[in-house]
Image (cartoon, rainbow, N blue to C red; front, side):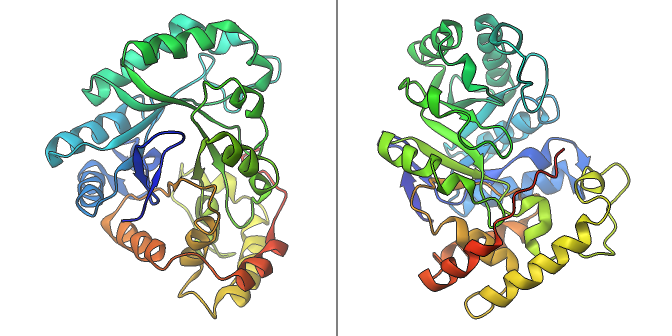
Amino acid sequence: MIKKKFANSNVEVTLLGFGCWGIGKSDWMGATDSISKKALLRAIDEGINFFDTALAYGDGHSEQLVGEAEKESGKNIFIASKIPSKKYEWPANDDSTLKESFPKEYIIESTEKSLRNLKRDYIDLMQFHVWNDKWTDRDEWKEAVQQLKKEGKVRFFGISINDHEPENGMKAGKTGLIDSFQVIFNIFEQKPIVSLFPFCKKNKIAVIARVPFDEGALTGNVTHNILFPHGDFRNNYFRDKRKSEIELRVKHIWDDVKSETDDIAEAALRYILSFDAVTTVIPGMRSERNLLANIKSINEGPLSKNVLARLRVHKWDKNFYE
């Protein structure tokens, strides 16, 4: 399994990580706890060591599953979690204050909750689940980060950048307290390449690429007539004419990658690992089948420069979360 150094440290994490949002509920999007646990254990057995979860994923249920899998495997893994805004808002509203969203005591209390869920003495990476760079100059969050690191409860601290706002965090990155940024990056969402990636390389900040398949759009499975289960968030994400537009766009992407890849999903992952600023990519993997497919894609390596050049035209300025 390919590994890269995490931020400015000698700690190594696997280029392919495991996104644990989809296992946050015991029966959701076709996954059950037993299926999710098998996927987690198989991932560890295959050599994956980076697992990204959050306190908000099933009110700690995802953290609990990851913690159980680590104990059952008998191996130490790199666990990343996140502190939700106290207001539980994604993204943070522009008028939300740090005191409302991340007061010092709340940051520490939330970290303690995650530690209990994981049954651990420390968390490798704790992240703010949302952020607004106007909070950067406030001392409360800095004091909390420094205290948690000093007490050995958190090794690294990061920011999960708001959807489609890759530069909203760079000011905090200049404080020297931020070790990583988690950001949406995929064939459609190419904005991080412009400013965030050069900034992270210069400052030795790790990049965690999330939503590599654009919630399934870049797997080739979203067609104009696909139906999602009742209550599935994708019914809103792919509402109205979005499915038809995605189907057409993906067809054009396939024309540009089919000479070098077996399918769109492979192209989506290989596109991301073609950028050396990326430390790890975290697709959601709720089954062993998806896990093994993603491992195969990663092992194929980066895309050629010619294909990468052709993929530039497929960037798409959108926000389907709205």
